[in-house]
Amino acid sequence: MKKYIIRFLATLAMGMGATACNQDFLDVKPQGQINAENYFQTTDHAIWATNAVYNQLRTWDVIAFPFLAMTDIVSDDATKGSFPADAQRLSTFDDFTYGPSFPEEIRLAWRGYYRGVFRANTAIEGIAKVQMDEQLKNRLIGECKFLRAHYYFYLVRWFGDIPLITKPLLESEYYNQPRAPKAEVYNLIIQDLKDAIEALPEKSQYPAADLGRATKGAARGVLAKVYLTIGDFVNAERYALEVINSGQYALLPNYARIFLPEGENSSESVFEIQATALEESYAGATAWNMIQGVRGTPNLGWGFNLPSDDLVAAYEPGDPRRDATILYVGEVLPDGSGVVQDNPEMLNERYNQKAWTPSHPGLQDNGPSNIRILRYADVLLMAAEALNENDKLQQALTYINQVRARARGNRPPSVLPALTFSSKEQLRQAIWRERRVELAMEQHRWFDLVRTGQAATKLAPLGFKANKNELFPIPQSEIDLTNGIIKQNPGY
Figure 1 (cartoon, rainbow, N blue to C red):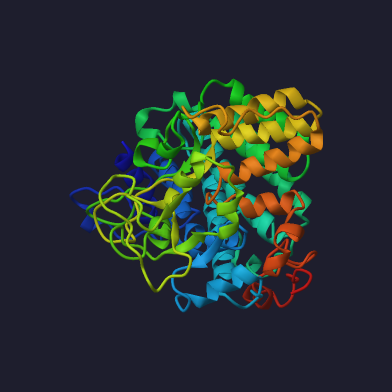
Figure 2 (figure 1 turned 90 degrees about the vertical axis):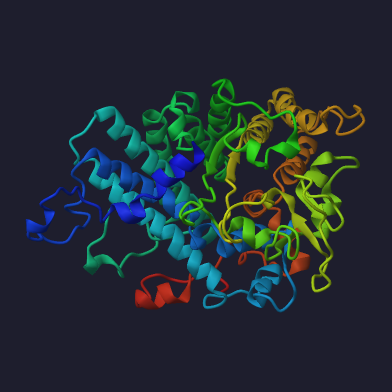
């Protein structure tokens, strides 16, 4: 079923140019070029356009070097990795020396996520015009609004005030879009997610062939994170608890199995980027596995985004999540197929085990693993954080202790014991620590450090400058294209 939906989601790469044909199609004169204005005619067109918005999630600009550099590598969870001279530009994310013109990853992230916005805008406007089943139409528009919110949520957290584009632009409008205040961007994200909640089914209501599409629970979960990010703890609590109380999700008993193929779209999955290694093409894959894979044999990869010494030291004694997150030299691979061999070219050699993938068709870049964007454990910890901020300490303890109990598994109670804090500040610090080790190397740490105000303290030894590095620079190319209508972030 996974391969089926990936083929389905990849269709629009070709589908926007696809038309129905019959035996006498050669006798028909061309009627003009297909474009967004005349494309949307049938239900298939509406589905293909929605699939295109999903398809953008797997592109290099969205999920490869730009994504990993601007989430994990820039945080205290990871270092550039590989050997020192390989993609040396990425070391600028280790020491905060990046700028508006270098390296290219910042520009690529801007481009990739705005392409996602463009596809969503085109689909939302076009699908509304199609004569089709209203329930399906509303669902597809809901999926596109969820995805538009997803793209904008990353952009606003990375860049702050940004151009807010909600419809396909005319050519004359391309380069005169000013930055909108981030509050306006968040308002759109919130409204899109609320619209998605109304339109989308629960996870269990999708047929198997549609497993992996955006759900009501995914929209609620992302909305909870949005509210947590802007400090609205009342609404963060509300939407996190709606996910919890929906009965759609549950923690997997074994933490280490979440990130293996068997854990994909599991009971713990709230939203994942779908991927698979097809034999006939690379249309369903990502580069995410390859970039972080073991550099050498077995499991050939590039060896970037290595867990840091600081992350290794963050785990409590005996916490099994450390070994489930970090793959060491000499360690047997998760499927037992081999042992990680030492690569003498690499410094501090260890790998992100959550990005490990078993043997698959094709070469390295035919990465087949789903990328976990939102897990149920994340929702539980968001609920705990919001409840604690809302002075509901005992209820908050319930949810953080659920996460710790799952991580402990069948080990003695002395491992990850249940927390019993009576202080709001103590519990706040404990929740932040728990988020780090539970979600390590899953591209959340940077955003957590910035939104909680910890970045200036935690990252200062690495070169972080307060009141500057909370945001990335606007790519200079965007400023130049708009003749200065777009202004640069402070400090750059």
